[in-house]
Length: 213
Image 1: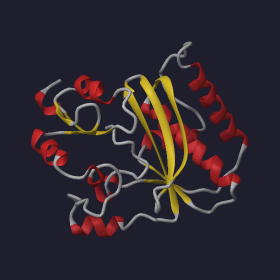
Image 2: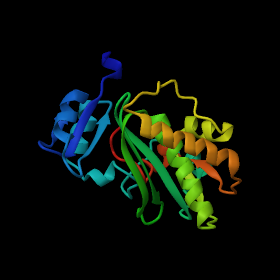
Image 3: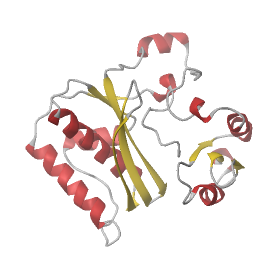
Image 4: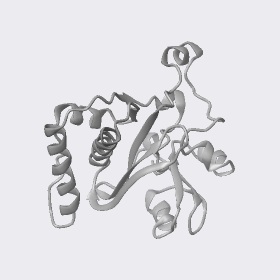
């Protein structure tokens, strides 16, 4: 990895909390640790500062989050609509263990969670999360909107197809069965839910974030 693209990993909750210079070191501290909280940063100084702070300031929306966008840009974007749900996915490796979930944007209450699935990708997880959210909202006859931070997944949902190049195998059989069900749902159901891109640069991490970027 070039110095320009190097990442530093903060582990707030893990076997040994700290700042680590590689994903493997970070993974060693979080693997099999229930409730692990970690996140990557583009510089050591940023990671060091984050480690000394409350992880809630970096994982999910926080009142102390400070956007780097200009005031004019922030005004154009506005605030998130709290009458909504948010979905997100996380994967350890590429491919790797994948899970996804949906939460109430305002209360952060978890509405659903699936996984982990073996040998998945983040894009597949984001796709499944959106469809799961759409199905839940339709079932409840809800008028809430749905936020996602994945343009790729939004495109897949619009096209009613999963364009992943990941090959199917024994390990990811269960995940792909869920993908097939999701595609079938999109092709056989109408929905009125508005899917909106979460503006991370303006609002911070999406509330459904797992804190594993």
